[in-house]
Length: 630
Image (tube, rainbow, N blue to C red; front, side, top):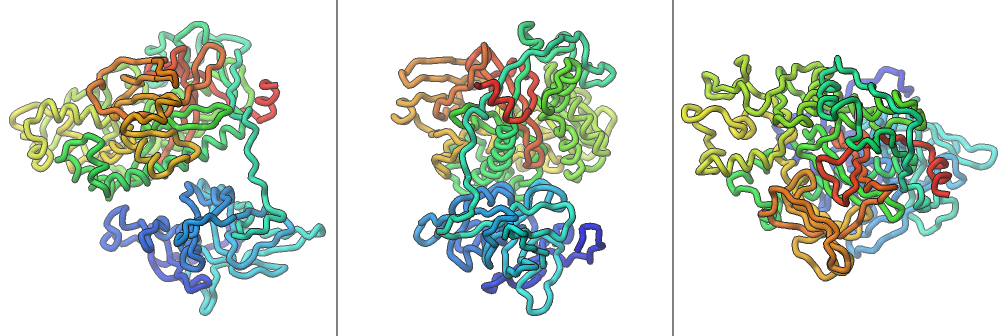
C-alpha cells in the first residue's frame, strides 16, 4: 500500500489483530479510540509480564520485546526510540542473566534477514521521531513478511501470522534490499540474535575528538539584531542592556561549533534520558522508602501519585545539563520542572548568527519554537492558559517567548506577574483580573517555590491539600492556584521527582555504569572521595549551594544560595571542558519527551549559574571539527 493510498478505518484500541509466530497476540494501538473506563490513567498503559516491563500498550517496541521474551526468553534493554534497537549489541536472557550477541545488518547487505529478525526503520515520514520495529516472519527473493503493532490497526487476514508484505529484491552484487510500503520511510536494516557476525555493522566508537567544541569569532559585530516590536525580543534587550547574548564585552563576537556526530549523540541521549528519568520516577513512586528521601510533605504524596497516574505524558518541556568532552557525554541533572533558556536557544542564537554573518552549518535551536507550538496543540488545553511568572527580568522574556508559542498553537495566553490582580470568584475558585477562572497554568516558578509557601503560610498542610484554602480569610496566593485540583498545571506536579537531585542516586542504583550517567549516592562514599565529587542539595536552582571537591580533597569551587539547609547528594566529579577562558556546559531541551534543540552556557567559573551566558552555537560537518583539532 502506497502512503498516498486511502486507508481503511482502524479497529478500536486493544482489538486483537492476529498472532505473530509462536502464538504471540498483536493488538490495535489506535489511541483515538481508547476507552477511558478500561484505561483510566497512564499507568494502565504499562504492560508487564512476569514482572518484566515490556513497553507501552500497544506500541511497536512493546511487541518486539514481548515477542522475544515469550518465544526466546530474552529481552533487549530499554531504549528511547525504536530506531535505537539498531545500535544494540546484546540481549539479556532473563532466567540466567546471560548476555547474548545481537548483530545489525544494513538494508542492502548480502546477509538476508531471517524469520525472527527485527526489521528496523529510521525516523522520518510515517515513523517520524521514533522510527519503527517489526518482526520478520517470512523471507523470499521478492518479499519479506512482517508482524507489527502501531501501524494501520487492521485485523490480519485469516490464518496469517503477518501484517504486511514488503517488496524485496536481490541486487547484482547479491545485496538484499527491502522497500517499505510507505513512500516516505527508510529501512535501516535488520537485527539478528546470532553468534555469526559476518557482514554485520561494526558499531565503532566515534572519534573522541568529535565531542570537543570549537570556539570561533565572528568577523563583525552588530549593534542591533533583535526585533524590538516583538515583546519577547524587547524584554530580552532590556535584560541584556542591548542587542547582545554575552554579558562580557570580550564575548560579544564569540560562538562555538559542534560536529554532527556530537549533535546526534546529544539527541539520542536526550530521548533516552527522558525515558530513564521517567522510569526512575515510576520506581520512586512505588517504593515509599525511596520517596521519603525526596523531602516532600506527607500530605502531598497522594497528589503526586495521582498526577503521575493521570498526567505522565503531559510535560511540555525540560532541559538537560551535560558535560561533553572527548572523555564522554555525562548528564548532570534534568530541569523538567521549570527550565529556562528556551528563548536564547530557540530564537536569539539564530538571530545573532544571521546578523553576524555566521552561516557555517546550522542553528541547533531552529526547531525548538515549532516543537513547543506542537506540544501545546497536543496538550488539549482549552480556553485561556495563564502564565505565572515572577518579576525577574529573565522570567519576563521567558514568559513572553512561551506566550508566543501558546498563541501560535491557537490558544489564548495571559501573563500574571506574581499574584497581581488575582481574586476569589463567586464559586470559591481563583479568577484573574478580568474575572476569568484559572483552569490552565504554565509557570516559570519551580514547584518547590509553592511548597515553601505552603510550609510558611499554612498551619496544616493536610487540611489545606484535602479541603483547599478558605477564600474568606486571605487574598489569593500562589498555592491557592497551583494546588487547586481543578487547575491543570504545566509542568505537572510529578515533575517534582525527576527535577529533584535525589533522583540521581536512584538512577545510578538502577543503571550503574550507564554511559550517560555519573556515579551518585545519598552518602559520600570512599570511591567518590578518591575520584572527586560534587555535593548538591536535593532541591536547588541556578547552581546554588554546590561544592566541587577534587580527588585531593581540595575545594575547587563553592557557590552560595538559599538551599544550604537541604539534604545533599554526592555525584562524581566530571569537569566541564574549558575552552579558551570559559567553562562550557551543553544544554539540550526536551519537548513532549523528545529532543528539541541545543545551546551552550558558559562561565569563567567552574559552576554554571543563572547569570552564566548562553553563547551562539552552530552544528557543522564533523570534518570541520577534526580540522580544528588537528
